[in-house]
Image (cartoon, rainbow, N blue to C red):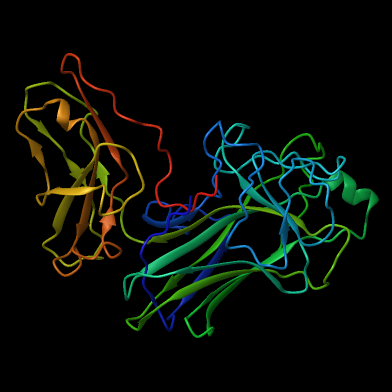
Length: 360
């Protein structure tokens, strides 16, 4: 299943800051999540290796759907819960989304072509003008350091992330430099280190479409040794202060219940602040069809809790001119409320990821 969110992007970027393995502030990790690709496979029932081709993958790459990755050579990829080991040359890589859980989560594993070849491309629309955004992803070098000692010609992978406008003009680029071998992990039975890379950038008020392209940016094409890498959890976040619902998760049946909000405006939004509350019976990805608006006050109250009130709640915060634009406002994570009414129904809590492309 492929889930997309509406975005807007601009034709010119004002500034950019790049980072690798930086702190949470550099990645806007508390900002509002607008886009995520985790490559799916999040249910235990999903096969060990994904079988649906990745639509964002370049046609220069072909997919293998067996866990032993029999078609070796540059230009092969797989969506895997556990990395293929290539006879001990590659690590038994873990999915980044669910580390140490071999039953859930695909990551993208690639035998790269190199030479500046595009291997992944996606188009996004609908972002807020004049906002600060964070793009980030997790990358790993899956070629083992122990094998590197015997194969000195093995090449480190290197990637370049490019954001373009709808006319193909590069707006901002970020080069990861080489992704190093994990010298601290000689055992191929274990997982190589994931590196968190990305960039912050500002967008002015010219509105168009954003294209994200990822290049395998090693200098030599068709490398036969090395240039083997993994990619996971691509995200775009709106850099705004976090919104937190601070109320208890259990409400007493028949009694009033108040949702309290913590939001520290750092000047991002013009006061007075506006609020919008949303409800959904299941924790499904955010969209305006299933999540219905239920209130517009800071501390929303249920006058008398009943079975029907159990479910998931979110609150959006912004200034007067931004509250009606979904990708301009700060948004809380989904908040699960249960109730104590006798014979209450169950609430589905299986949904664990919001805003994703899911190919599982």
